[in-house]
Image (cartoon, rainbow, N blue to C red):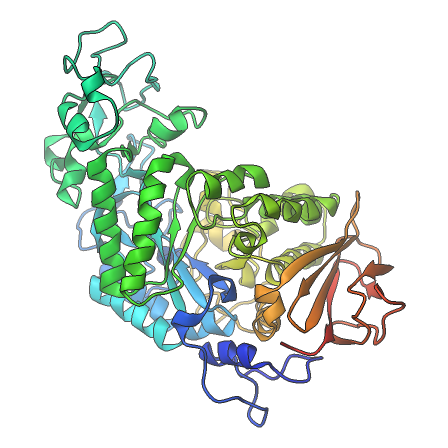
Length: 622
């Protein structure tokens, strides 16, 4: 638990700020003015949160008895091999519960776990097998992966987090299941994508082939109705799909075992039509336009809300699912949550696009309430890791008006410096600046986290970044595996020898050091954010940026005060005048050295050390 003092430079905490901080264990020290009561977890808005993203298998092992998921045999049967970065390592829900003090001490108010439902333990062609430790190869979407524990363990985790005032976000997979369906025409399951034009749903083996269901394409069949889909019972329009006998009932709910619920068109090229209808690296691509699928997914994931009272969904591979599905699913889940008493259920989708306009399209067309802000993530890599123009970051913010709902929606975008699918920020720096001293890499990582924690959006911290993980491996296997290191004492050689920023060692060989400089820096930034309503809910105004490294500044405007965040992405000190509100005359320091008076109405002088930042505030707290 954190024992927090008042943030430097603030005279008092406002009622809303105190209530939020008290609810998550970050209230002011004893003796400070503490209004009665605290903010109930259900009343907090999505933008009030700081999320901590965890891959359970790599975090903490609380029960070695479940390391093999109740299976016997070698790693190809159980999926367990802690010496190989592509297999299960032993982390579980009990271990996660044991580390809630550590997570809350960092300042996190919400926990997002990568998927925890039961996965196919191992898949892949001979010699290229790996395990479903990451959670994205689901087969039983109704139960917890036995490598992680049981439904009772998951309930204990959710209840323990809620008891601390922390929210829990559930990682939803709609686009695909594990690789079970095979095609008779393809060798080693490598099947070229076959388009709808070349292989229509209504014809067998191509456009000139025999009709599968005579009359299906007539006027009486126009429109996507349950009756029309029911007539399309033969799936041999593109390939001949089948399920091996030993896996005939591998999936739950049972309707997922019907090959008619899948597109069966071969491998996605991640371009054009195939992005929606192709198999995602061999995974079975669900026909999300099918009415049976829509109804089934609504019931499936609604039950997770009913049973556990979770607080939101992160949606995996959202861009690869048709808009018509999200237009039905999102309102249904929000209604299900309201019926459970969850008023501020937060839904955000993974859309791996790096331009605001591309991200915004999914809020307009698909109806997603928010997405992961990869535009900002990419801009941070450009401006801070690659020593590029600070205009890149301002440009990402300039696109906020494009989202449906504009700036209000932008405040609910989930921001990040990196995650389990892209490079850790430390590695991005080291690739861009291979000769940079380790301390410079650390300062750039710290600076990127400062932008995320002070800017609009909902910050998502990736586990291990606060311990100086860099995601640098041995060059073998997929690059994302290197970003999924063990927090506990690792038995994977490439993880053990990977470079760390400000490395520390514990007697146990784990990485839960609350004195690590990045842990301390992030915790301080979290306290600053949670104590200031403007940093969570305030309007953001860009103040300064340029076409080269250096000055980056923005204000967050509250009801009665302005908070100014100023960053220096260069290796030289900066002194400059920046725009502020004309009425912001008197200033106090929140972080770093701040001038007490504005130079003139609307103009404020700042001094920022190399690769550093300052936070200044004018006006009374909200």
